[in-house]
Amino acid sequence: KYFASSSEPSIFDKIASKPFTSSSSEEDSTFLRMANKDPIAVADEVRDLWELTVQEPGIPPRLTMPGVVSVEDLSDPVKETITVALGPEEAKKIVPLTCNDVTQDERGLRRLIDEGCFRAAVNLTSRLLTMYGQGYGRLGQPAKHTPHSLQLWFTRFTLLVKLGLFEQCQMESDAFGELDRPDIFYEFYPEMYSNRRGSMASFSFRILLAEFPMYLGAPNIALNRLTVILNICKKIEKLMDTTGAGIQTVKFWRRRRVRAQHSIINCALVLKNYNLAKHFIESIIEEKCWSNEELGSLNSVAGRIYLQCGDILAAEKKLASMKQLGLTSKLFQVQECIDKGLIYVAQNNFEEAVKFFQKAATLEPGNTMIANNIAVCFLYLGRMKDAIATYENTMPADLKQSINEHFFINLCTLYELESNFSRPKKLIQLQKLAKEKRDICMSIEVCLKLNSSN
Image (tube, rainbow, N blue to C red; front, side, top):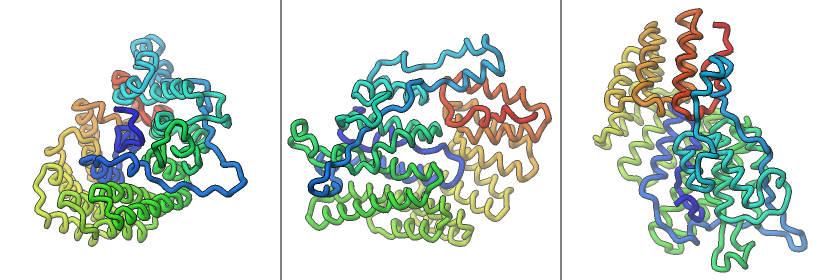
């Protein structure tokens, strides 16, 4: 069900994450995997519980009055680039899925997202929000909120962030503040929700708005907002534990608290505050509540954080801790190979790194992150043709997965290093992108380096 009351996790949590290009992105996938594992069923009053800001007597409450800021639909940059680079006849062959081709409801929205048509999905959210009286021209006008309308806004902002449309997202999300205004809570609408209390906005929505300043180059603001969320989660988790609310309820809020800690770790890494990042990951590992699989993932994450700090010895210790758990699943074999490869990269031993990345690729063929690591190692070893072949041979296996902007940037950079006449090869990649009818989350000119001199 798409519109559950503040339900989580959902597929919309996943689309917020950036494509893999570094070890830090693997940290995101690890925490996401832990958050989505075995969803915990709890009562609405547990899920919706949040700290309501105390209003000063005699002062009217500040309300949330959002609206779509642009009347124009988002265009298709791939088709526009095809028109310029290859001509209008070639562009006519591209018939992407648009918001007009799906049902005008949450099912249509889900289909567009599943197909990777993120711009069309944004356009559909504009139409759906207009039905709620929160469309174009309504910014700053009074609005009535429901869990459905707030989930729509969350989906829209997630898509805008994924597409890199930060300015538009900022203009629209400012109206929500930090989701602490009274009209975001059920208590504000007693005639509609007489038996409900707590937040109508999902926890994932709160995390997204708290993280958003990171994308605007203000990680300190994001860190402060995330710390507020973390403290509230700790307070509720402690309350649930001390009042005997039940194991599942405590576990539910523990996961939320760890989700906030994960975002703080990302912020700390952006700020290069490695001591803070290490403090949080170690404090999570030290908790006695994890399964061996979860502990293995956390040790892997910690090792990659230490590598970013330049502490190779500590990273090796984390890898050893992971091995001591005796995990044998394919997932952890892949994880171990990647971690070993990254340690060798940090030691400038690219020959050994390639061996472990190739072993990981054998276990998980078609993984673009692994292929990218192999290709970069080949480049450092002076094997440019092998690097290019690695990129090109990975894409036919699963081009949908391979639509990774940094993957294409690296490939097109190698084309430029290989020859002064790289444009024809870049246009071939443009045609491959067009055939998939999926959006990319970066300027197409930047992604394929079409504006460069060769």
